Every structure is written in C-alpha cells, then in structure tokens.
Length: 189
Image (cartoon, rainbow, N blue to C red):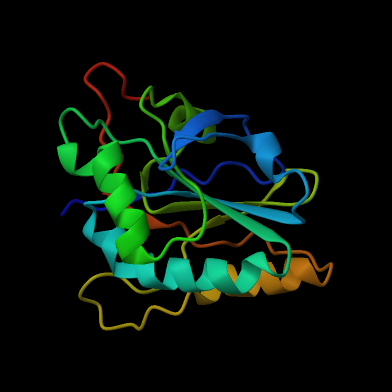
C-alpha cells in the first residue's frame, strides 16, 4: 500500500460544481445541497483499505450531523475499467453494507476529482454555507494497522466549531490513503 497525501486545496476555494449519477440512478449536483449549512464532500471508493477502515465512522458521522444541517456526499473517481471493484454495481452494494445515508456518486470522467484537486481515498472537504472551503484534511489520525481508534475527531471538531459560528485554524492535517486510480493519460499534472 503506497501512501498518498491530500493536495490540501487552498482554504477559501469555491466548491467546484458537479453533476453526477448516484447509486439510485439520480443526478446529483452541488446545488442539490443548497439548503444545508455545511457540505462535506468525501472522495472514496469501494476497495481501498483506508476507506474500508473508516467507512463505519463516516456512516455514523453522517447520520449524526445531517440532522444538524450538514450535508454529506461521497464521490468515487477511480478508473472502474482497471478497478471493477469500484464500479456502480459494487457502489450500490457498498452503500448498503457500509450504511451510507448520503449520495454516493460516480465520477467516471474523473473531472470532478481534478476540479477538487483530490489525490487520495479518502479525501475530505468541508464547505460553509457560501460553499467556500473551510476544512480539508483527515477524518482522524487512525490508519489501518496503527492501533489508533477511528473516531472522526478531526472532522467532528471542525463541524462542531463551524456549527456554532466559529472559525477554523489553517493548520489542518492532510488525509492520507491510496491514490485515486487515474485512467491512463488522465493523471493530473
């Protein structure tokens, strides 16, 4: 397992728009979340051991924070030809097995991952009401095999501060995981 860190998109970046199909066949756009106070965008996939390690906590966190006005959306940008475990059929299964209560979208053209400068799975971004980036980084310090419990403490802390109108420090720890599986010739610069 080669480790790839987040690229740490600059804070204040406007959330790039997207229009992608979810596991129920619905088209989901950035505007689909316009009523939410905060938006968490997660780049994940089905087969990555780093995502599998945190999937239960991600589902739990979404269940908890959606009632507080935080929308969650997950995007799979992996090359599904080279990695069929990440195809839509398996994404549907992943939603059921992980207990995801949020849209899980397929970015088959990989354009959305490029727009967000996503590099790894998982890669997390939190946008405020104006859809300006206020957090990017790790869920928490847990990694497969490091014996640190998965708590979601970094994102939970960020969401809690933002929900009461606070500001976040610019010191944020990058996420780390498997690299996004780019289609040949589609790798970012």
